[in-house]
Image 1 (cartoon, protein in one colour):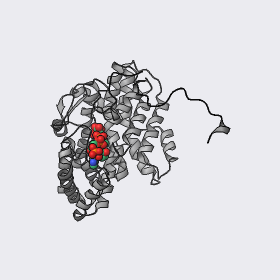
Image 2 (cartoon, protein in one colour):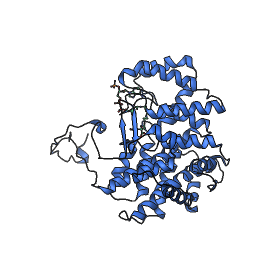
Image 3 (cartoon, rainbow, N blue to C red):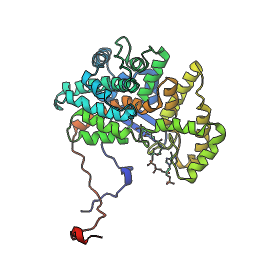
Length: 380
Ligand code: SDX
C-alpha cells in the first residue's frame, strides 16, 4: 500500500498531534507554555504552578495551588517495597535505569486503570510529581550504601529534593535556582520522550507505564542524556587552549558536539540563555566553575563554525554547570531533567486521553515478496 505522504526520517516536520500545551518558534528562539513566554515563567512562577498550568491549562488560583502543593507534599513518600527493590539495584547502575524501573514499579501499587475518572487522573498526576524526585534521591543515597532520607515536609518541592540528596537544608537561593531549572525543563512540544509518552498513552495503559516509556526515551545522549555528556566533554577538553582543536577534530570525524544543535531551534535555545544566567548567578555567590570559561570559548568556536547551519547551544549546554554547583553528581543530571519533564509528559498524557486514537503509522515497505522457505540443510 503506498501512502500519500512522503517518508521523513525521524518524522522531521511531520505533525504527530494537535496540541495547545506549548509552542516553539525555532527561528526566533521563542518558547511558550500555554501561551506564556518561558522568560516570564522563569522569573515570576514556580515549578508546581507551571506544572498545574501545563496539565490543567490554567494558572491556578491561590487555593487551587495551595491544595495542589499540599496534595503533592502528602504523597512524597514511596512504599517500603519500592525502597527494598531499589536496594537490590547494582550501585553501578545508571540512575536513569533505576528511575525507569521504579517509575514502572509504581504501577504495581496503583494499577486501577480508571482513565475516564478525573480523580484517577488527578491522583496519578500528584503521585508521579511527588514520588519521582523521592525515587531519584533515594537511589542516589542507596547506591552509596546509605539509607534514603525521608522527605522533609517543612521544605517546598525544590528545597526538599536538594535536602533528600544531601540531608542538608539548601540555601533559599539554591532552591530558587533549582526550581527555575525545573520550570525550564518542564515541557517542549513534540520532543522524543513526549512523543514516546503519547504513543504509550494512546494504548490506554496506566500512567506509570507511560512515564517509564518516556524516562527510557529521555535517557539517550541525543536527547536528555546530553547534559551529562556536556560536562564530560568540558572536562575532556580541559582548557581554553584545547577548544579549537577539539572542535576541529569533531568536524573532521563528523562527531556531534554535545549540548549543541536542535531539531527546532536554529538560534540559541532560549532556555540556554536563562540557564547561563542562573549559572552566573551561582558563580557570583559560590565561585565560578573551573570549566565555565572553556564552555564560553566552546560556544564561541561552535557558533563561528556552525552558526550558519543553525547550530547553537541548546538547553543541555549550561544546565550541568548549574547542577554541579548545586552539588549534584553528573549522572543525576538527566534524572533531574526527568523530574521536570514529568509535568510535560503528564500534560500530553491528559491531552492525548481527551482525543485518543491509538498511534499506528504506516511504512514504506522496502523489502522483497514471495520468497521461498529454504530448508536448513540447504542454506549456505
Ligand atoms: C534535547 O526535541 C526537543 O525539544 C528536545 C529537547 C527538549 O526539551 O525535549 O530540547 C531536549 O534533547 C536537546 C538536544 C540535546 N542533544 C544534544 O545536545 C546532542 C547533540 N545534538 C545533536 O545530536 C542534534 O543536534 C539533535 C539530535 C539535537 C538534533 O538533530 P537533528 O535535528 O536530527 O539534526 P541532524 O542530526 O539531522 O543534523 C543536521 C546537520 C547535520 O549535518 P549534515 O549531515 O547536514 O552536514 O547538523 C549537524 C549534523 O551533523 N549537527 C551537528 C550537531 N547537531 C547537528 N553537528 C555537530 N554538532 C552537533 N551537535
